[in-house]
Image (cartoon, rainbow, N blue to C red; front, side, top):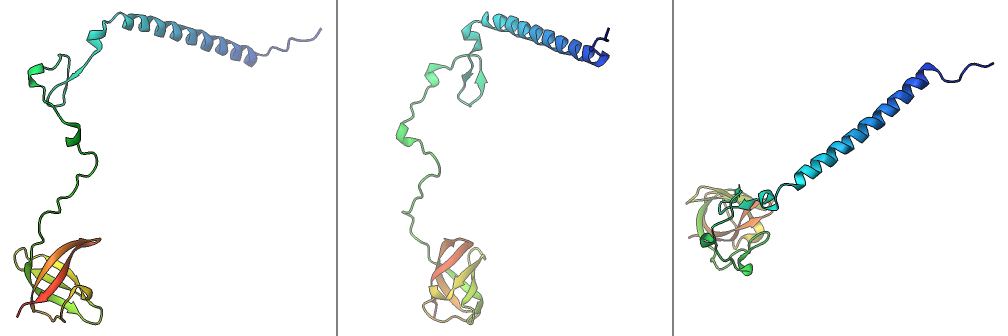
Length: 152
């Protein structure tokens, strides 16, 4: 007669498999019981409300504090820019200008900010310490002086 092919490790693996299966069934039954218990909670107790400050509360909001909001007043994304404001003509002094490279910087006399200026935005040639008037436009790298005119 031959020996049984069941070894110790095979029996242990089978025990573990049965134990896992039993634990899985027990967890399933436990979830089922918990679900039934949750189902007994009234729907009204599960509701949450948002007050006027945006906080969650268990009490419904006061209808007297309700405000009407028009759908066309809601702005999604970036609000449109107001282009009605006219460009302000500023006064400044040329801090640095390189004629070979065609650029320089102007110091705004009011804010003392340094603003980039390119030769294409000039009416006449500039030199350092010249007094100028200009307008500011935002470029990809920051403010740029445009419509630069020499003050005489």
